[in-house]
Amino acid sequence: MEDVTSAVPEPPPDWLTAATRITALTGAGISTDSGIPDYRGPQGVWTRDPDAEKLVTLSYYLADPDIRRRAWLMRAELSARAPRPNAGHAALADLERQGRLRTIVTQNVDGLHQAAGSSPERVVEIHGTVHEVECLGCRARTTMRSALERVAAGEPDPACLVCGGILKSATISFGQELEARAVDAAVAAARDCDVFLAVGTSLQVWPVAGLVEVALRSGARVVIVNAEPTPFDDLASLLVAEPIGTALPRLLAP
Ligand SMILES: [Zn+2]
Image (cartoon, rainbow, N blue to C red):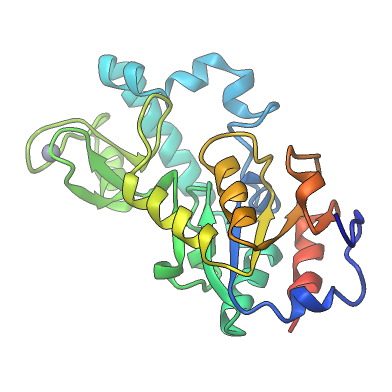
């Protein structure tokens, strides 16, 4: 450990300011300032409400049309809230404009990095996105917007227009495998960076916990910005427990 503190050092350490290939990993904590609750965490919506968890569990979703109908209503409600990116997302978009960002790997499905101005090709969404829907039969994709228009027009559980199969948000439900292509891209980004910046994630679930190890083995320094302790705090070069929205802009200033 070095430079370990829970506050953002002023100025930030030279090695961070000089970093030119930063890989950021973001979790639910970066989106809470945008009004998006942490669904999966220890106090998460789904953790506290097993009935709500059925809406995002593949086996229930496949088996029960009523679960699907409720899931579409939930998606419509989330979409209507129209969350906006916050200062944390903006700081990472600015890092790309500085030419210092390699990749953002995100556990979030809200699309707020792209909404803040991060290039889509630099964002790896390992849990997918709520802005698209995918057919669980033929894998055809369409937009969430078009699916929700069908729901609003009176189809409680719109079927795939290609094959008639079951449509679901293009997110990784419980019981559903991660997309190998996204995981591979995340591992490559962890292996090939000078600083690995973990933001708003407890680093307790695969594959993100493994990404920290990959980055460390590859010689990157690790920065952790999170309100709660993580299993990797002792291995981090810098720990920050300040709120993400105020910490990131100062940490990542040019
Ligand atoms: Zn289909």
